[in-house]
Length: 95
Image (cartoon, rainbow, N blue to C red; front, top):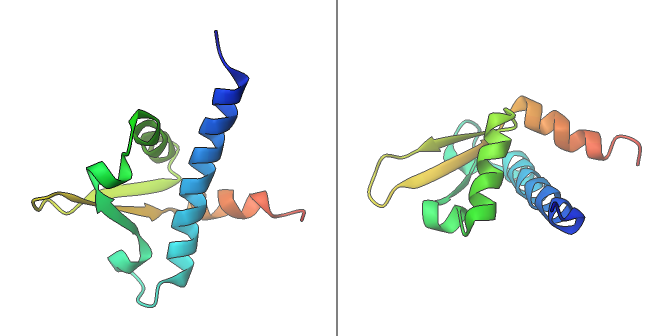
């Protein structure tokens, strides 16, 4: 059975990730660099199954873009997209 509480927790997790990416993007001093991205290893970003699914859900909705450094240990850079920026800003449109 679907738990309404779990749905709310998952929505909050996705929103928190998006808002964090939004804040990083707009506080970056150098444009078009990894300073505009949430950066970490897979283990740091995908702390558990819920985080892993949240990142991939947001990517599949074109709200974030995830790129890999290809180095060892592999570092991921999570950038908010234009759609992601619009989505976050829509939360505050009528406030």
